[in-house]
Image (cartoon, rainbow, N blue to C red; front, side, top):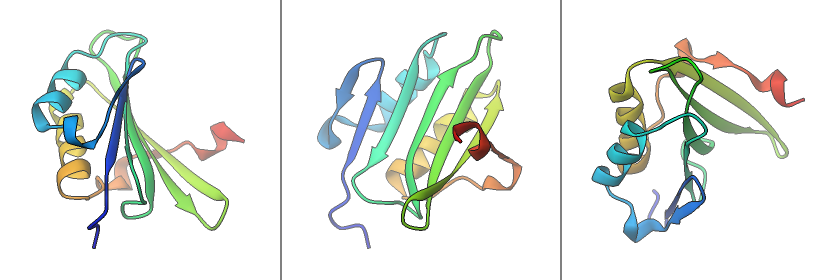
Length: 117
């Protein structure tokens, strides 16, 4: 289904191409997120409609946010956010997105599309 799928991972200005991305790198980058740090994982084609997944540290110590953007129609999108103090959940979402081309269950995520209007 995704035979030509490639990923790009960006973290704080450093870009990793497909062959440089592995589970250890994802775990390390997400585990060590600090304020102003971010990780963005972007597929070369939509994965279940998603354009990218990203994570960042929040101002509140130990809190992180993960966001995912889904294409909607030709030019639109929906943007979802989930805040947590559990980095293992974020790591699992990234590993599934990268390794299995699966999205998290978005029912408990907050739709923040309106923030981009």
